[in-house]
Image (tube, rainbow, N blue to C red; front, side, top):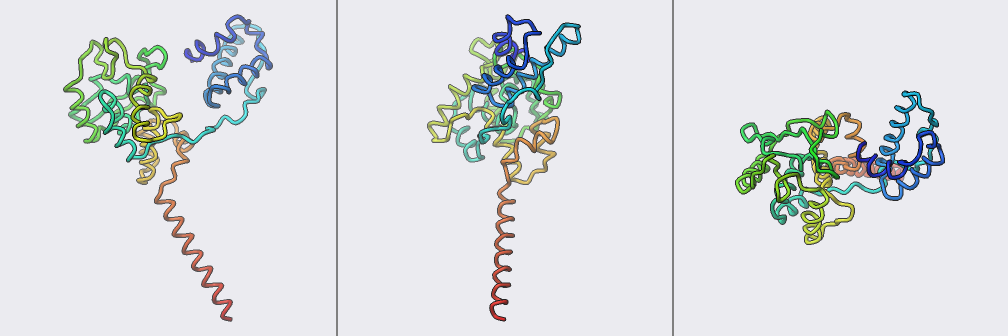
Length: 289
């Protein structure tokens, strides 16, 4: 919310009194937001404005009553297919990447962590004895300050597969310690790397080299890829929810409905083929009569 205030809300409404925020002003704001932001982010920004106005009203200030029902937002669902890496693509990306990106991408694939969570990881978050990765903080995209993760459900101990353990052990041996123990720190060791820098300098060049589509593709493609892989392997939805740390399984279902397991497709194809064969037999019997 602080980021929305700083980047979108204050620059637009900083000089207006709250009682001047009417339907017209909010509709134009929403329309302008949709030019550069997704429907979901637009809704979140507007929700931040409404929260401020609601608080002002509780404090006795005069405000205009405006809500989502008063605005035309168009479709707020995901307008574009969610980019994700297949297992083969992820393996090629990790193999071709140089450190520290090789290890960073490995964590992204094997844990499904969000970018900010990976960039906030410290050496103490790695437990090689119990083979776990602790996720309990996130790096802010704009300030790179360490903060609480996205939700309470985001805090978790995630399994450290053997393949990831080998990569992490090798990385730690050559890692340059810093005062805060940040695994992926800037050169001066004072704060985490920026997500944009990781994508621009670490991910995009590898994607272009390997011929993997790079438009609108970022670190989240590893997370979506892991989810797709788990669904393809028929992992229970409860496992997927715990690994991705969604507070509500409905969120998991809404985001990953695109990932229909191939086994499910094959089963339906076989069912369809069998039904077609039976139908043909029925036709042949009638023809014989």
